[in-house]
Image (cartoon, rainbow, N blue to C red; front, top):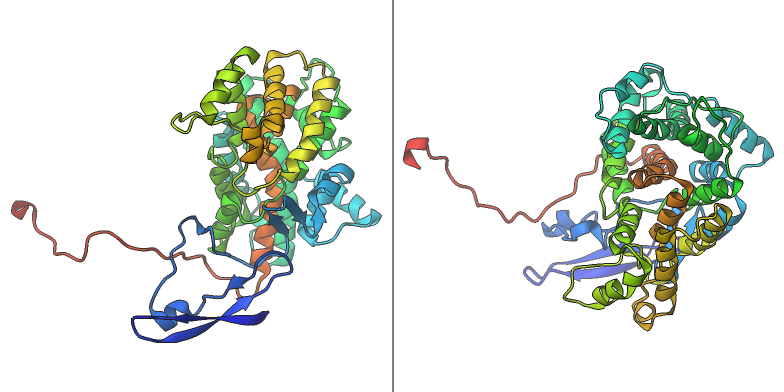
Length: 431
């Protein structure tokens, strides 16, 4: 609702316009500039949309200065410590936590949709063995729309619901198969008797010729990774899903576009960069050398996994994963591994060094999620895939919220054109 207005004056013409200020339930208000172009003949200029609210949403709230992240009003710390991933999925989709009956029905429905169409398995064979798993994910998720013509009417609420269940249930299977294909192992079919995370780990690491024992500590840590990555407001990939979906594209196509955006190293690839950085450092003894380089403004080297573009305080997700990372290393006996020794040494420096404290370069969620996944045995090139598995529910929820709005329309950002002015074509002989 507009409680106040902002008066803008055009000094060229002397014309004034009162613009409504809309207040949300949390965070700063927004200036409603819908009539700005019509009244002034001007566009606004905001590269990267850093100061622009692209939509209304009831799903996620972030206060980067205070280090707050809320899903539907619930603090992320409470959900990560006390909830399960599928319960969080229900919350993001429906706006409220489920009761026991709703929870059990939701889990059952997701479990019943975990298998992918058998013909999709032939698609994997079209990829090179060394293809990046994210390249496979983009293609396989987009291909789902070729198999489910019965639920592609985005104006039908039931179709949207069925598509949501299918996407949520099948994404771990598609992800695990992308790994199995890359290492030349047979695909492992999902087991409905297993939980969501346990099923994924089983599809990732079990083989038909041997028994695979799932570590409860590792499973719980990975579940927390999924919960903490489930949604994060209007980030690059979520905005991509909304923009693609605004054209009327089916949800599988929209989410495939989101996976492509997530693949970027400035977005979902950050936790992969953490492990690559640790490999570059090499040994604990070389850490002071790289810390010195990180402090040098003239050195291009940057410590990955420290600080955050949004959080100017301690990343609330990192607080949860710090404990999970230490628990996993202890449970799996990986604390003496040189890679994890380096990670722990870097963590200690970042939490104690005045330079890092002053600049608020705390270890972030990418730092700890990379450590956890590596300790579990997930290869580095699968880190962003795990991110996609987690974020799928956020994308679905945001897409469903957008589609259900009565006034939603296709996204169409404007631009500041700085190219050549209109000119006449000259034939080849005249140039």
